[in-house]
Length: 205
Length: 205
Ligand SMILES: [Ca+2]
Image (cartoon, rainbow over the protein chains, first blue to last red):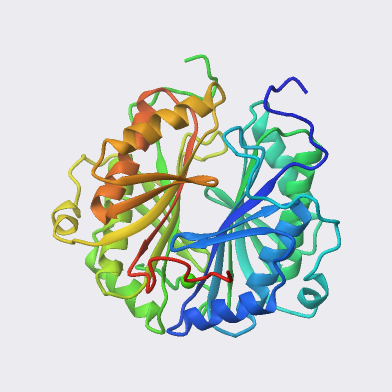
């Protein structure tokens, strides 16, 4: 690694800055209930009026965000998860994180039980320089090997399938980037469940 | 410019991939009404179940997204705008865009009338390489010169103020990046209006 920002920690601090949007008058209840059902004790969590941030090991960051979305979605309301996963930001601090945890995922067993069709998309931003477009194309190819329908849209890659598979695919992409030595990786994603229309909900044409 | 992707168009194709989330049972009405009130004729628009994409000149992309959010927010419902502004992606196509438009903003007069306090955040990703952290820090400083309260949070910069000022600040940052020769700029933002709580809506602690 010749990138000065890469400091070769055994496990670097990953994070996800996200929000879950339930399109219902009951939105506070949907969020509160999901938070009660999900064990967040292996990540640092902070929620404000502009979103929730979780930090910790990659495996727990994905375990918790996937579980929160799946629990919210299984209410049956139209629910959208919008999040930015990040690792290796040179401006990041060492604080606000639990890394001394083992790799046992606290919510995997419960999440596995939830079957939920979703429509989503993701974009990958390898910020450490280099041949970043090829890194992106490789990860889109890897996503196609999951049990997910993958298609190309402006500014993102569309993903359709079961919510668990979509989150697992996103996690695999993120882990691949880390294993390939990307010094600073950002991945944005939006995942929608129970949309009242499979198309053109917001359309004016 | 020694970046092979920079082709020095007079005006390059900008885009925003976004969604507006009204946290109410009336979410379809809120979106439909906002779309009726906003003139989108100077941008290319496509809406699917995973979001809306607008493409065109920077000025019209911001004019339309700002207006849609402000019109949705003035319903009084808790409404969140979540979007990714992008320009210069090497994988982008030349299609799906109107660039032959003049610079007169079709929605500015109406937007100016809407007073709406918001809480937001943004993250800037200059993907063309180079000293990207300094580019980011410079733009955060520029944002502080707007009439907006600016603070630092994990993975983003928090913005509090009037909705128009926040969108104008974001637009200025994006235009600065373009003028400074950034070959590929991505900016993500989340902007929230009428949150029932100024803090910890989603909190578990
Ligand atoms: Ca909420």
